[in-house]
Length: 377
Picture 1 (cartoon, rainbow, N blue to C red):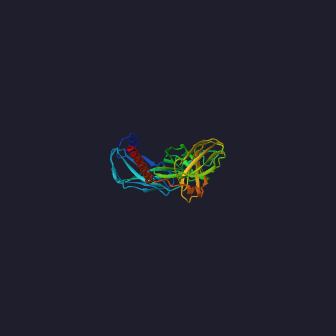
Picture 2 (cartoon, rainbow, N blue to C red; picture 1 turned 180 degrees about the vertical axis):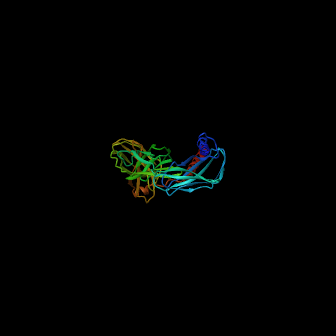
Picture 3 (cartoon, rainbow, N blue to C red; picture 1 turned 60 degrees about the vertical axis):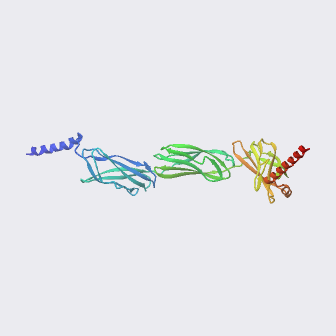
């Protein structure tokens, strides 16, 4: 009697252990085949997309009542589309998509993906989500030494990505005032984990100021920024060219005022492409709207003259000297020249076009009369 009871129990145990081991398909077999979190690592406050693929590897179809993604206070599920009912035929994959937000501090948190079956029962799967809030880092590799006011120099900035995932749409932009800079921004694109890139900006400080380098980037669809601010503590260039105007003479002739004199380079460097013109409430006129001097070596001297018309109320005229240094920087200096009331009154009005036309008509008429009488005689 005891042997008859033992044999069926042994047979049942054999079926439970051996048949699954042999891989015999006994119905629907549904499981998570893959998942993806985008971006792979979130910063606090980031939103991300979780994509879950469910595979039916069995021989029978199965009907899903609900497919839920459950979060918590640290990582919450903020969007779960109406995609919870439907069948999964044998050998097919169904994809479920959810939107999440990182609310907690840095760490690894687990979401619970739960499938509820119509025939009863459920299946669950844990999905890890990492929150890591480090941003891009900026550091200065090279600056001019010394930083000279009005002299351009190269500033090399390194942008590094210490994050465990890649970031995209990386741009670097210099910000601030009191300086000139080229280029106005650099696009780097994608920075891989532990990757870095070096960009160079050409900066001309105009005064004591600050410059801020801003790196904008995206982690998935989430925009972020990192900044680095450095002072532009400028010093005066004691060796630069220094053009000085001397022996100034002011006169009025041919309907315009003329300022002439000498220009001397009292600096220690060459002044290149030197030009002289006037500014303010005057109108430069020919023949010397702009006077080109050329290059002036240290202690060199050259003459100049500029011509312009001025209103009777103008008492001082700014004379502008423009030149380039050895690095190609454009430098300007201004000297004020007093215009006497006598010079202002002596400048005569230029004939109008109509007056010129009358003069030419009169000349032609006189010539015609002369030719007429000459032929008759």
